[in-house]
Image 1 (tube, rainbow over the protein chains, first blue to last red):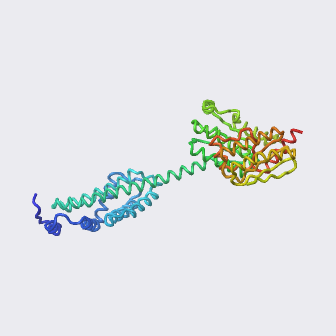
Image 2: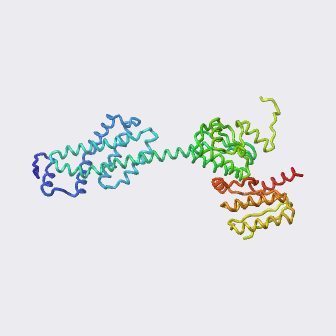
Image 3: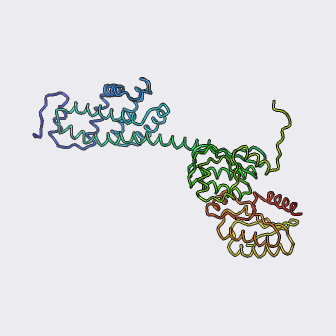
Length: 304
Length: 120
């Protein structure tokens, strides 16, 4: 109610005079004051924070020393972000941190959790410091809150972006792994497909196969889909297109290992099975391929 | 632009350059048939290695050329379709149905020789 509040507390002296003079200092002024406070009480606040982290059972995948080291870095970056009001460094730090701790099994909720805990710890210390000057506290919080929210946001987003990057990388690696084009005889390629084919993978498969046909001068290709559980109409069409494109490069395609479900799908979409050469299993497919290429396989001696 | 047509024994080899206009394709169709008659060729190889794109007109023309040449008792083989072109073609439903294809000139010739052997 009254504009000025009298206080006898030591820490309030300067604040008192300030609140007498003007009702609102420039936000940056407040921020500077806030940052100074956070720096001054760094050791104590950081310890309090680390305590809250272990209380909340976060970062259990890390050792006490690691937590302390990271806490120090995060605290300093936090305060610096508050001070400079730029968040790029913080974002880079967050991504860097993620790169290090994601392989350790640290989850998103833990990272967001500790940042919010820090926010709380710092806010509480502000409450304590300015408890006698409610108006000033409000102004300080006006400056602190948007910045603190932005920081929490930045760290969370940085962390998630890093996870997404890792996931994309792994997906790419899996795709590469799963579609090897193998030459088993002169002019004979085998493409064993395992797992789930989505349209993107199907497309990649086709491109890889066509390049393989050209590089290896293949005349016959055996595509084995024993390891493919299900195929939707889109992917079945991709398979047909792969067969047709291979023919344009002068190669014959034999498809082997069709499950009953996939056979059903192919019939349903009206694939002209006259165009597609299919054989029950991979062994049969290779045998037919060899015949097409003019090979004859004979046992010359007893197996040892 | 003229499409060079070379004679190799009983086989004619027509090599496409990169970009052929519709008029070029038309004149090729006429020219190739004339040559087949003149030299009594038994096979024709159309080499499209240099083509980086194949549109529906070109695709249809190639099919028609192959059919006309077959009416003269000769076999046509299209060779050198690039992987990217093949992919694009099948996506648009241009499969060159009924026309023989081979990887390159060497394969095309081998295919024709095999065919001639079987016929004789």
